[in-house]
Image (cartoon, rainbow, N blue to C red):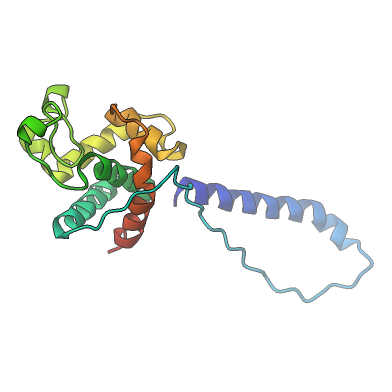
Length: 188
């Protein structure tokens, strides 16, 4: 259960308990007759953070969709919630458009490779590891878990803290598409 949902459920439960404690003794002495009441279900809905700024969207091919599924699988294997997958997918959308990029020659940003454009020279792993979607996602998630409060911070801040990009606000534009992709593939 994600953090927002858990807090909402606990808040509703706390209010119901407090209402019962304070209203219970008063209701027992009230002059009005008892009413045949039926329990009422309370629906608590998780509210995803509103994406920041203008949103971008691209159509995905089969390889990109397979990479989305690999990111989700690695996130689940790491025992992390859907929010971690959203941050990971948005990061990969920004860094590589969900394409597992090899060395791009003169167009390469230093020695950046793979879905997250991680650099062997920065300690992310070997070129073979970084271009493995499961490995690169796990490496990204390991960095994300080290960010205090990542679950509640804006996506672009969480991604930037891990990635240290020259364009720190660029991740935000992919939040809606990443959220939609996780919603579509999390349970498939």
